Image (cartoon, rainbow, N blue to C red; front, side, top):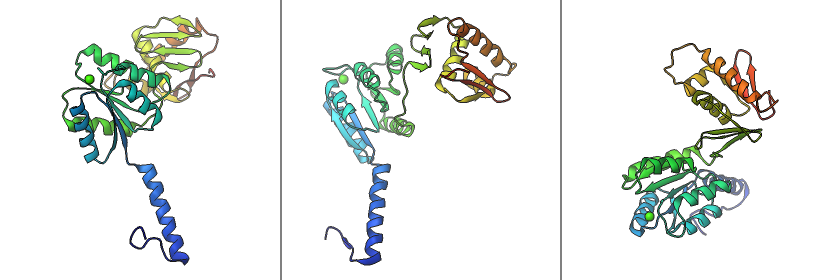
Length: 258
Ligand code: CA
């Protein structure tokens, strides 16, 4: 007998007990425990992080260099990765860029001593999801990880592609079927928003709140004006009308064209 009352005797009670055990097993598979990877070469910091996360109920793997971190991140379905930047054998940026390039979308929290604004911006552009500088209070690290885990491992490509359109937010570049398209900042922001929701109907008020700002009080028809600017510019490089007007609702950008 492995546990008290287990295995159950026989008959219906036995069936119910097995069904409950199977449900518990499945629930545990679905709900957790959360598994984290910490890639950090400073041994005392790596261990402190691991101990703190284990005390919070996470399962934690450690890697002390970038190469090992990459191997583990490829091989295991982690819920999140804490990644240092200055690492032996492979730089943190390179680890993140490689994972994203291979289609691994595990949320990454970069925890680094580098506190320059360009370091921060570069990390986010390479596909890092959150950035904290050392030393950061453990409660902040933990809260950030929880937020990343809630978001999950959805695909978050750094460069967006919809049909013939490609938009690179970091380089601020748009191309259509390989031809560059010059856009002004607001046109770029509008196309960026539509490309983040391909195939969906997006309302004018959503566009206003996300491309202008939620306190914009000017004429809401500004959206139509910018959609027409965008259509005109895209029409110079493709015959395919990509932005569809859905009467009374909003706009839809689709790979198949309008
Ligand atoms: Ca380091």
